[in-house]
Length: 137
Image 1 (cartoon, helix red, strand yellow):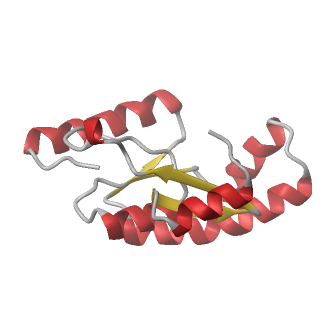
Image 2 (cartoon, rainbow, N blue to C red; image 1 turned 120 degrees about the horizontal axis):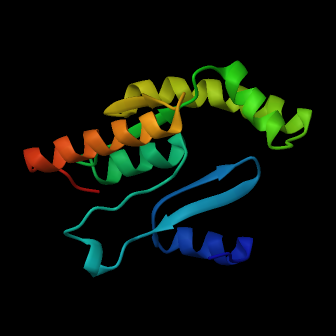
Image 3 (cartoon, helix red, strand yellow; image 1 turned 45 degrees about the vertical axis):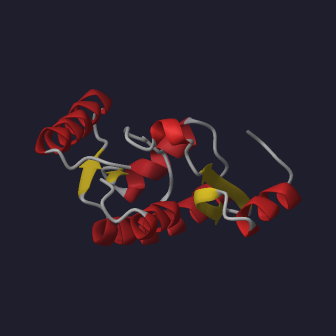
């Protein structure tokens, strides 16, 4: 759901997000899940600042970082999808810091060199965690 910046900032002030972050001038966040998700899994696609907030709020969460094979490959992927050079430079600079943070806070890092392999690896990590009876968040 898209809201105005003022509405988003009001939601932040009122504690309505599980995590939120500002990224390249835009605000992104995950509202606190409704009661129906309290005992289930919650899969989030978020950047590392948000992941760090989730780790703080829910230390028992399973955090899986997804990384490109290299920063050069990340830049190439962005070029293929039509991103301009200025955006690519900003994103690569941020990605380097994010990858370092991911190594510190994530339980596992999956390299997305082949999408099918990465999906299978993530699925296996989640299945192993569920089987151990410790999955949450």
